[in-house]
Image (cartoon, rainbow, N blue to C red; front, top):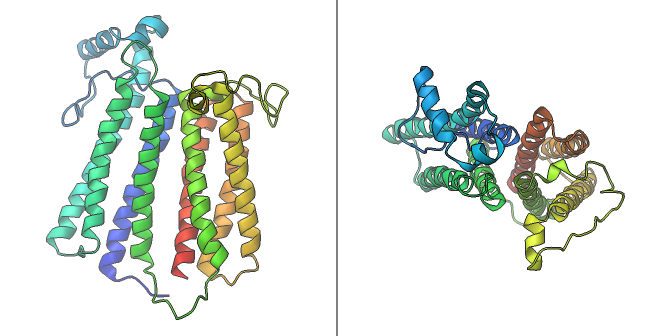
Length: 345
């Protein structure tokens, strides 16, 4: 194994810290969605507004602003100011954490840049990360805007896009940090690696990501609050009316029974495919690092399956729903780790 230079290890640690903050951001975003807090802040002030309302007059002002929008007028018309503070602080914390990620990225970046510790190979990647982070902030506000019009709920398409971009940014940073921490050694001539794993692991990582995206549509359509049984849905493996919308393709993203069925099928496909690859890997010539990564991956897949079933059967309680979302990102991380470990070998 080739050890990373000291300067690259320091950058890797910094990027892993960013990953941990993005993980917390995704988790807090899930809690915000589960508590229906996302539309409580009706203004977007990306460079200001870091402080919460201070004093009764300030709270009254933001509450009155909220009362002018459809969510209050059509759903939360009985909401008290004390109850409003609770949902406001969830969304406020989510936005402040996003700003904090920007600061934690920018300040060390400038330090490493001025100290000439960033290689020409790494600099473009860090630039891409910065641009994607800014686009994620814009996409978040674009998502919120969809719920401040006639329909008091954010678009499932925009919600899933916001989640998907967050996971892609996380994955890009995580993969880059892995490469800095454990550089790829020079390959010997010939193919001495596990061909099935080197092809199958990235494919299954993409499947994990696709399953995660389908979970975004489940959340965006509140599909987890229906068909709360497993493995049957209303006594059937395939529920009725899965193609009731026109045109037909809308059913995959907007029709509640098919949205939930899609997520179930993708999740089960992920479980069986990961188990099959893991079993094949038990007899493969894997190094200790890759083998450990595969064990973690299959363990996370099984844990995530259990969390998903429990969340469904218990009608999506906030703690379980948040744990299920966290488990999805941890499963994705384990898949990336396994793919990277096989690539190194």
